[in-house]
Amino acid sequence: EIDNKWEMYFPLFINFIASIGSFFITLMVIPGLKSTFLKANLFGIDMNKKIGNKIPEAMGVVSGCIFITTLFMFIPVPFKNYLTENENFPHHEFVELLAALLSICCMLLLGFADDVLDLRWRHKLLLPTIASLPLLMVYYVNFNSTLIIVPKPLRSWFGFSINLSLFYYIYMGMLAVFCTNAINIYAGINGLEVGQSIVIAISIMIFNIIELNGVLHKAHQFSLYFIIPYIATSLALFKYNRYPSQVFVGDTFCYLSGMTFAVVGIIGHFSKTTLLFFIPQIINFLYSVPQLFHFVPCPRHRLPKFNKENEKLDPSTVVFKKTELNFIGRFIMSIFRNLKIVNWQEDNEGIVTCNNLTLINFVLIKIGATKESNLTMILIFVQILSSITAFFIRYPLASVFYDV
Ligand code: UD1
Ligand code: MG
Image (cartoon, rainbow, N blue to C red; front, side):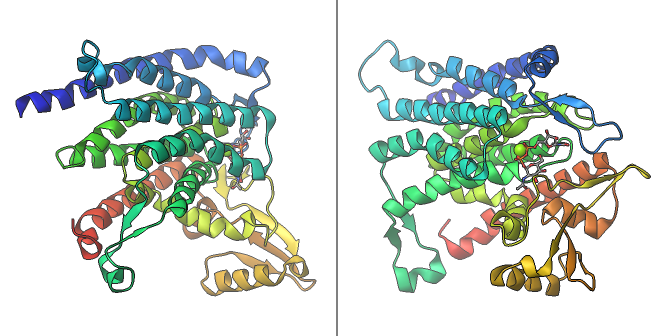
């Protein structure tokens, strides 16, 4: 028993120490690389400032590389006891660790490619799908368990469990696509991309720690190996990305984060709980659907609009002719208007001015013009409240649907 506890905590302890190291390395490395990135033309204009400064972009590649390197060096630690004896080596666990790393590494590469090449939207769906392939293939060889437990209220129709087979793989692939893009489109004000990701990561970490004494402790231990160094490197990145941003994180960081969450959720068999930590991102996605699927025109940038007079942010808008909308567009927007969740102004000529459909703009409509720094803090606070709600759903409420 005591031996087992030590077996469990020793790798986590090493991982924690390594993560502290990676935090300081990230902190040290980023400032020196700013000019390198600017020279390579990797920069973005900070649009919500009086003077639009050139800010080095895609710095997520730096924190990401340090995150991955930390994990590379960590590979032998959980297997140290098997290094001297060849019997009983847990090849299953080993290959999972490698596959998870391969998927995250692949996502880092593709995310960076997106930042450098500024890819089109359809590629944004393709990249995470490609990056999740190594993981899904290993999942197929290793477990191939695609059985899901049916929630109690539905059991009279579907029975206790159903085998989703191929559909389960489609679900897992879509999870990677969702997690990566959902973070990427909930962005545009200083510090929000990293801030939300850190809150999600800490929520996953707390969940793993709670479950560490349960029957599935191996899976949660595995997840912690990834989440702890992820949090460490992202915290260091946050120091430079928070308001006023000295660096932008780029799509590289959003993809890397989403992929990390999807990977630990899939391998740890807690993908539904992972999704629970994405409540603001899910709301932002659903609200964005009309623009994402072009039922309503979607400008390249939907981030809030800077007001030079009071230096606050207002909701940004999109202007179009009402006749431009097709049947579906008009139908959805009439629902949105009835629910009073959009700011819709129409003049005599049928020219419509509507806010861009993002959660950030929605919050601005509700609370009025806000300073950028405060807005980020409010949205991160909303993210924390959502996580608390998620824990409430996961623990007391889950017993209504499952035997937990
Ligand atoms: C997504 C959003 C887009 C939003 C953008 C902001 C969708 C469909 N896409 O696009 O609406 O405008 O993210 O990140 O919702 N920037 C700032 N301040 C910040 C962060 C970013 O001004 O705090 C600007 C900078 O000019 C930066 C650019 O946004 O260069 C980065 O945009 P990018 O990540 O390339 O946009 P997408 O992810 O394609
Ligand atoms: Mg982006």
